[in-house]
Image (cartoon, rainbow, N blue to C red; front, side, top):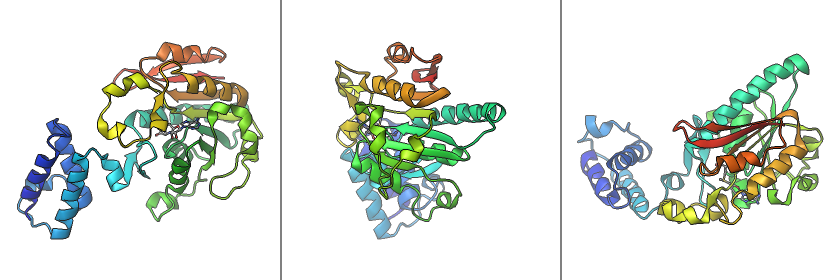
Length: 314
Ligand SMILES: C[S@@+](CC[C@H](N)C(=O)[O-])C[C@H]1O[C@@H](n2cnc3c(N)ncnc32)[C@H](O)[C@@H]1O
């Protein structure tokens, strides 16, 4: 089949689920890249290229799954985050661009702190905790971007921990970098920081007591924060495929994770240690109010100028 006929067919299949033409075109272009192994612009430069039957059938199968509401990243099994490729699968949240931005801010602030500490404490290995780690995108970004960081990610979901602890285990270029891989453990963070005593590495069952033996330098979290009543605003590819556990909080207690995170940070962060959280843009003041026990607290806007993050210093 010719490339042009194939992509025209895909656009028709996707029309109802993706009525926005730009979004539909972006998906078709990504499918050309990932399923036909051609650059997205080949649609324009090589419309009459002959596509082998097996590739054409995988391409149209993907279009069919997308039209049934399946997220593209679950179909391919991966997504890009901060310039790296992360594995994803149903059962784990697909990392979002806002969280990439959170990581950029976190890396900048932690590096700044590292420089300051070199002057005051002589430096050393930074301990960074990622609460509600999901795919491990935050934990891995910290481990890969902050030299000498000791990173732990916690999540209650076994499916998420399987994915997080398996990132970069195949022979991808990133996996050959000489960094310490983060460790991951199962933990219900709503039970509070006293839970750290018995935490075990998800992969080999070794105790994580060494990590929690000293005060931590930074805690980062993107916890569930979408209100149940906000479901009506969401698309079905999210509602029907991504885990409720990763997304929703009760309308009557929307900040329960932030209360817990504040407890973790007050108990485990060293004085001067950093806390960074992603939050519901409708509740910035309420979220910041929970961190009143910190020496500094500020709301940080995302690139669309929405108040999506809170940054606090212990
Ligand atoms: C919004 S997702 C964030 C995932 C990942 N950090 C990211 O930014 O893509 C929230 C995560 O919190 C986890 N979670 C939900 N309830 C939890 C709990 N009580 N304790 C620990 N983790 C929890 C979910 O399994 C999910 O992976």
